[in-house]
Image (cartoon, rainbow, N blue to C red; front, side):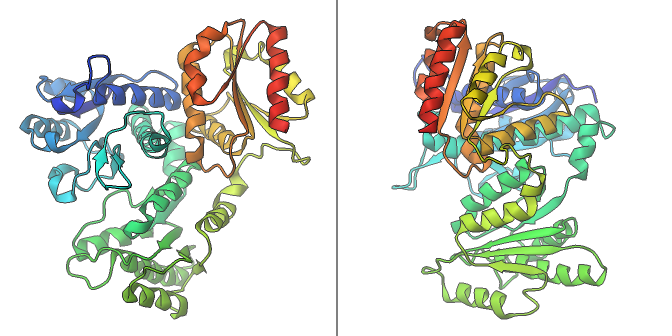
Length: 480
């Protein structure tokens, strides 16, 4: 499919107003970050077009676009022009196997407040909630710890989801990468009560990073019969379901007397029995929170049923332990066998030496110096399809002890993207802190690297003798 525009970002004019004339507007900043993320996964700069509510955009332009990102806010849903843009895109695009419309939540909106066209889509929440007041506030610093936990994690999710849509639309089913996307194992990660929504999203992100398709991909309907049909269809596609059960009983759909959490578990148990009779594989992992002090009597009764009822336990492994232990068990069962090991049998500390193919010769003296200092050197791979290369990079980020970004012929933008990856490493399921992060800039003055100081990075620059000496000092600090 020949599409010249990769992404159209539709937004209300007010949502891109700059607080001061010196700062970029929220949407302009969002576009800049999305470009960086998509550049990493696509391997080339994406063509992203901004569509403000009063801009005129022809039908032919809509026909020529792969993906629409709608930035939802009060202003957006009150703008007839913004809503018309969404309708025009739906009319201009033909149906495919992949989603082509994505909704980014700039502010919190209830499901009923959202345009009917967009209600069933999974939202990417890009706002910050004040933990003390519960009120929404915009990020003042996009590189703060709060932004790293929420904004950047959602940006990663969005970029990967758009990436899959672009690959499918532009290459078609004959492309090897598309075939890999369509063949991946599918897991049902049940919707949870409100108390476990963050934990569910972390597990979802980790499963996706390891190549699993995670269902449901749409917001579950509020009406019971519709919800039941959707859950059954999704479960049939899966070989495993994961259920997280905490203190909250969960929402009760219209026409039902059980919660969404309860219904999903019951349907998964029924499917397990049915698949067993058909000699088909289907298993379930159920995690019950060890802290149920605030659980209602109804929730306690639901949990007791899971523990005691033979049918409710069909095909299930039930665990009531700390969530981190559960995640480790899940990794061992699903992920660890597929992971590329990055440490040898001596279990020495590993340094991820991040460099580009163009700098393979220039980086050699530094690789040798790191190895002489007793570290295992882990390097990026450059061969294979894009998803495999990216997966290798993420696996390295998850398991490294220290990281060094090497800059010689590459430009500052490349360095900036790798620094962002290090910032996002906790969201890829790291189990330990990064002991040290550095940038080595061969034959470059330190002044060129000043912008990275705020990211807690050691800056190493100068001629080869000087940088190798500074590298020894950096490695010594990691050892100690």
